[in-house]
Image (cartoon, rainbow, N blue to C red):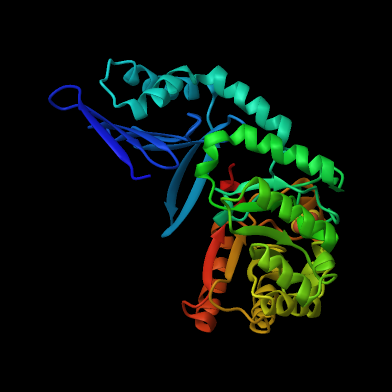
Length: 394
Ligand code: SF4
């Protein structure tokens, strides 16, 4: 559907523009350049008000996004805003659309629904969302707009000191019946709002650990339920990835898996032991070769700042050495995940080794060193991207 645009002049200087697209409805107010974005179920997705950027998550948390610059480096910040402020920002939009606009029929249904979608209605929607999903702890940055399907719950390793993503749940593979119910609930919940989703992400941490036959059946079921999506993504870990052959991966590629994301963290063995992530470089190399041979791309995640100054030099040298042995090419991504907010487990292990927690500025410095080394090797062939887990929202 082509966007339908309708602009109303409210006064000499003020106007409001409604834009109905195939995946969202935007309401734009001039001259302040305020913008509210809704999915096609009329749930607020985000807004720009008085020059500030806000996002709403599906569990009805509102975040303010900003940036600051220090010593020439730009850092992003995200803060949850209080409920009262969220209510007032939402009301600003609702008061505007209360005007008696002579809108085309195609808009009327949406506008009347938006005017009823106040904070309490959004809260109700969030309760439905929480009833379908365990907290979606993290996604790769290019997958924030995916449709998440929790084929598994938690992490089957769950022992890396720096990671608290899945400590709140035991690892579990959903049964065929549970998956079917999960998919039905997702379909009902997203409704027309599904048009905003760009791909399928198989969660949680190790969805591909599902035995191959069962995994294939699950993917076929997902295709039946959501035929509009062709591209599937997932995390993968070395422990389960090596149980799959190249032909297993080829079969998954044919079923839509386009890229898998591997938490390599570092090529330095001592640092990996310190992080309690027991994976070997030789296994990462073998797994990456198998995945790439199947036609699936990889997202390699490096944990910048891990182990602080104590490990910084060895981390850089050994990680670059490891990456040079991976058959990376166009379509792959290297993520530099800056570890600047940590948990008590990790902080305890740093303190026990008498290592000072690095500042955000120091971590950015190391990140820049990684970038410059990686650029020498890959030029623009492999995408390099910062992965800020604190910017994640769903
Ligand atoms: S980093 Fe990955 S493997 Fe380690 S505990 Fe977290 S999710 Fe599990």
